[in-house]
View 1 (cartoon, rainbow over the protein chains, first blue to last red):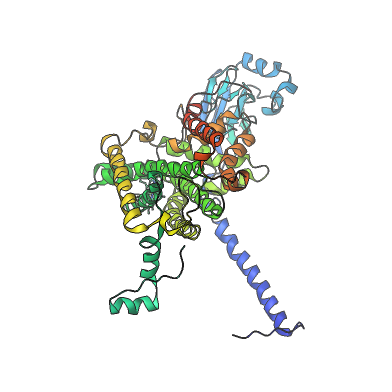
View 2 (view 1 turned 90 degrees about the horizontal axis):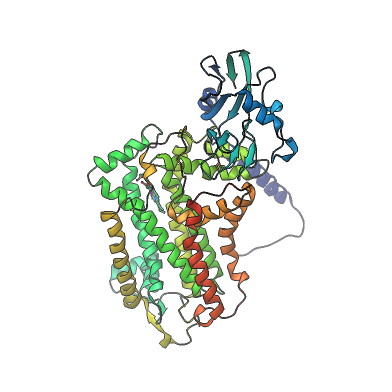
Length: 175
Length: 364
Ligand code: HEM
Ligand code: FES
């Protein structure tokens, strides 16, 4: 084998670099679909459409669990005491400071709607358990209060609020 | 120590083949004539045992895949029907599920052997790092395999472990959605885990080839940790190592068979005989025993990101060991202090699962 190298840039060098650049763009264009196929597909997204929930059967002090996008959603009909407890704590003392008012819809203060997935590592907390009569996660012991805010344990954040709206006083639309 | 083979096949047909692809010569120089230190003890037989277990997992796994259905509605029942209906299906399934545990027992012994005798030190750093890569691939394979029977522990284990990635700032949530192929662990997750669980053991086999190649370049370490000086310190692989490895494999097989035939579910979790239910979390989510030391780290640190970082660091630090340990002496036989710390580490790792399975005090 013999190799010769020329000091000057030739037209051939240009063609090689141009071809390499096209190949790099092409490779990136191929990798994109290979990764993107992993994201939720059309049917999964369609099945994630909003759902409506009738609240009439939920008595005061009771909670129900519904599923939206495969995630459990807790809807709690809170008692006066539960609401007062949630509002009595100094917000600044909370690990993830948020007022109770900011976590419910005005005029529907008795309804707490949260995604029932522990913000630690995703277990489902149990309602009406734990030191604050809110939620308790059996996996690693995170305790949430009656506003779904984290109070104790390894979870870093409050239970998230799903997008929802009151269609009427007794009907909820989640999503 | 290895080099161009001097092997000459006697049969003309083999000679013809050898000229075109020197395969038999390669096998001869690697596993027959290859010189091994004469003072190797039984802790050195675990490499052979590990190769055997990889073979067992691949054979039983490929057969299980012929009867298994990767769908959330059918996976649990298909595994039950493997055990009840398929001819010898119970045997195949228990060989495979206990095989995973045996594989990890062997790999832990193999790794602790390396730690004790300083096998990670120069010139074996690449060999050691390839081992750490194999260990990581095994963890990923075992984790995804455990999801396949779609029991409660499968489902919740998958949920907890994939959620570890949500601790990554900014992009964590998107990564988790990408891993799930949905908004929670579901059918797309099960399907991709099956695909990868089938693939990864073959990737492991590829890295094992590199591992053995690197071993045969550097040569084996030995209990004294002193490089062999003369021919007299060595014996040929066959028959000496072949027989010793074979004896080790048979003893290990007896141990393995005891689990398969007498206590096949001892190392498993009874909750995994309940079909996955996304609405109910089992009272105690625990991974399989071989991940418990890492799970204990995760649970001991009361910060999510901190716990995840500590857990992954505990594995990654192994790859840096050759440079973290600057002692010239290899074997702990001649390092009294290292020896003490070694045993503290062994006992600590073995005791840590208690930390993982008892409840955390509700500390903030
Ligand atoms: C590195 C080697 C492997 C390891 C460590 C491993 C580990 C595991 C584990 C822990 C399980 C769950 C067992 C249970 O609880 O029932 C499993 C299941 C399964 N594995 Fe593997 N596996 C390996 C190789 C393979 C291969 C090569 C295949 C197929 C080509 C395979 C196919 C399957 C199937 C179909 C199941 C579901 C059936 C069942 O749960 O028993 N595995 N694997
Ligand atoms: S998942 Fe809830 S405390 Fe860890």
